[in-house]
Image 1 (tube, rainbow, N blue to C red):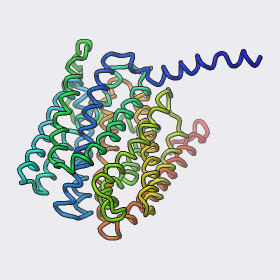
Image 2: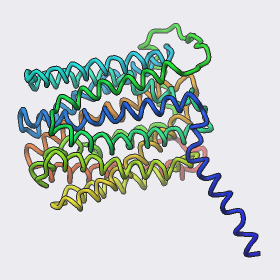
Image 3: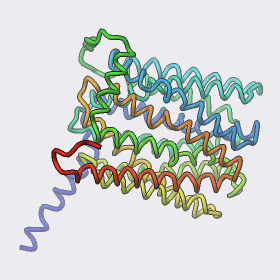
Image 4: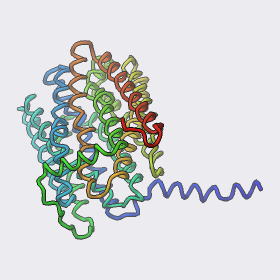
Length: 421
């Protein structure tokens, strides 16, 4: 009996390994993943260098919050319209256009820094233009995943996307910390070059012929239809509310990372790069762990939200570099798990004809609410100091997650036939 129970275990482990990377069976997804990985490394180099550049030009925590808000504010205003646009156009074409525009913006910023003419308003304008591009690019990329892998491998592809993003989050900041010592302009230039890989991968894909959308109404009408659909879906509302609360309160610490690095932990650009890489290490590990899951549970969603708030609270109190690194690894793992679970929950719940619009609302909730988080973090840090700002944000994140969890629990316990809340 003992030997019979043990013999299937190697086969089970092989199946688990295959499930972890099942999306790679699809040629289009392999091209997408490789291109994205190269591009994300460059993107993280710019994401690390840009706030450091701003803090050098004008050392103000409030200004860091404002620049961070400008990069995501357009998603709040245009996210729903971007999603409606994605439902009407071929997604690959949309992504090629947005990635090409982002490449141009990176080269412009590199030139400004190289010729020593860069000013704060230049960085702000580039951040705002990048935010407009992201308002369209984000729902397009999210909705494009299911076209590459189908619904069976959707959770796996989203988790692998997160692992790609966070592998770049490890390599990009580490490289940026070294490159910034030589010249900050190189971070922006390398980012511009990295977009060539993702554009080439998209153009090499073999996709079925695109069928034009049968929607004849205006984009505004399409947006209204998407909002009306979401208003009838309680589970989708909860997921969007949870991701919005985490975007406002949970991830607001990121805009204050230069303050923690330079003023509290007193590290140089290389230490700053290691702090950003620690986030990526935790997120990458979490992505590989959940990649074999098919469908996330409510317990996973709310459990990781509470764990995320707890780790951020600990980071706000930390005064030592090693402890901060350990907490940032935890924050990265919890944040990645929450984002991937929310993304998968939405995509499995919506019909194909609504996918772009719902993912546009996801972009609005996730990236669009980021400006509120950046502004409140910058304002609180300006008034009370960075540690207090992050501490208050972590507590607010936990309170909102707890409230949503109670509402969900009471809704699912309501006797059948009782009126809706």
